[in-house]
Length: 206
Image (cartoon, rainbow, N blue to C red; front, side, top):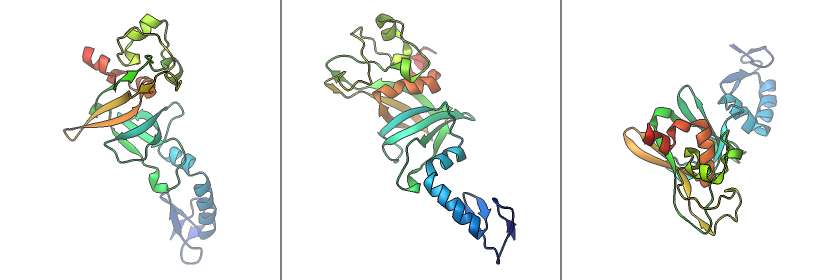
C-alpha cells in the first residue's frame, strides 16, 4: 500500500494504484494527471529533464543518433552535453533525451561549400558574441573559422546563397569511435554560446 502523490490518500485495492512518470496515484488523480500530461507533454518532459531557460536551440539534420530531424535544446549539466526536443511531437517515444560527456566532444566546425555570396552565422542574434565589423567578423572564431573577406550578410536570410550546402558538424568520440552530428550552418552560434572551448579554431589553438 502506497500513497497518492497528488492528494495524499492511501492507494491499494480499494482506491486503486497507478504509476505515471515514476509517481504513484489513486485512480481519480491518475486520470487527471494523465490528461494534463497528454496536453502538456513537452513542458512536463522539459521540466523532468531540467531543460534550462537559457539553453541553446539547434536543428539536428542527421548523423550518428537515429532521432527525428528536428529542433533540440542544447545545454551542459554535470559536465554532460545534453539534447532534448524543443518542439511538440506526435508520439511520446519521439521525445528522446540524449547526453554524453563534454569531454567526448572533439570539436565542432562549419563544413561544406556554397555558391554565390558568402554568409556567416548571425552570432549577434544567436549568442552573446557581437560582430564589430566585416573584417573582424571574418577573423573571429565564433564565425566558424571562415577566412574569406567577402561581404557579410545575414545567414538566416534564405536569399544569402544560391546553393548553400554548409553545415555545422559536431565531431564526437564515443567508446573510442569517431561519430558525427550535423546541424544547420547558422546553428554554429548556438554551439559557441554553450561550448565555446570546443570550437575547432579554439581547440586547434589550445
